[in-house]
Image (cartoon, helix red, strand yellow):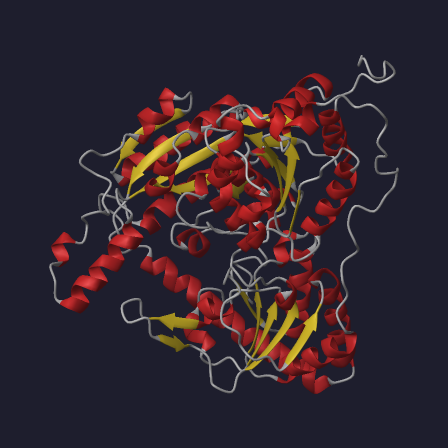
Length: 584
């Protein structure tokens, strides 16, 4: 009870917990910090640890877990970051969530804005005059309420902005004294049945009709898609649309949008792009990277596409850009563009196409012939990749295709999920991705994969699904402490180390520089290698309560080790197998 008003026994931080529970948040990841001690206490003692807290060893990992979770579930997850210094630790992961359009609800705190309440030193150098400035350029919304009355309003606004496409992270900052003060009067909460987010935005049906006309008339049309797989039902909608139109599909791989073994899938086949005459970008941002060849030494760019190709778009390109981050890429002129949500546009386009095909036997014959031609290319691609996977198959250390095949042989009869990385696309070339949840999306760069993979494992905890993380050694070196979080919270995940004992992507760049300049290529590894000494990832895993085995460099030993690890994961615990690979 408070002295001011004995009718109220709540604290203002309890209101934040009420809102988190109202929105159905199941988990919240965090690294401890005194600036949110009021909220921390409310979560435990008022909220009954609901949402359940996950303890992380670094703020980047905390954000990445929320990022991976929302990728896998389509539902936002909150993360709590300590005041200014915790926010600065987490900024890289927040930026990656922004570029990946991931709705992560970042909750922060600040030392008291009331100067009279600040402790010497720590409350001063841990506080900024407006902390949201640190992330404003790569969040959709940030706010720092000055009173408890501003908390529900800004929370509702933040959530709605966060999940409205194109989705992205938000940042809410709560003053430490605001959290810790008694609640002296009731604060209006969201009413029952309120709309948490707007309905999807529909595209102009006239423009959709024109796009369908172009795709039907083209000889070699493509649909390039990137984020459509993020919403339930879109996987099936895209299959129906592509089959109706008889078009090839290029899945950029930021989410699993289309089954990789479907006969219309020509992803990763750059040679066939040269004959394309029309491309529909369906909620895709990464246009140029997939359609052009880059000489990494000279930076010269050579498009795979014909000069007269017709570009079209359905999605959110114009609404998702900010001036600070250049993640939107180069602007490619479009013949037709419809601003709208593919959830609505794909069924509309399918119906438009069906009506046009029903009225034209010639069009139906053309689509059927085109479908057969695309299927022939698709089957030839997979046959070629299967042959390429046999090259140096028995070598030690393992080739990436051999490792991909070994993992596939172990998990293919399970209900599996590939968390992030795909072994430089060899998993996509050798596995069968035919369910929308099997791959939430590609890795985002070094220091992102282990945290995001744990988020995917959290999303599927208790489901019986086998979550596999194909994790590079350089990535885990950034945050080996994430393994402790996996053990602490019993996240069932099979971590397969793709260990080439180097930051090899950058090593390869140094090889290019040496060849270009005529310098010593043999020194390219300096500043890039992860050996002398070699990290013992299995030992590190075991030291933190994760089952670990390895390092393994003989192909015949990989399958048995993976099967032993699989049994551990099936028991509900994490396991790691360290596999040494070559640089191919």
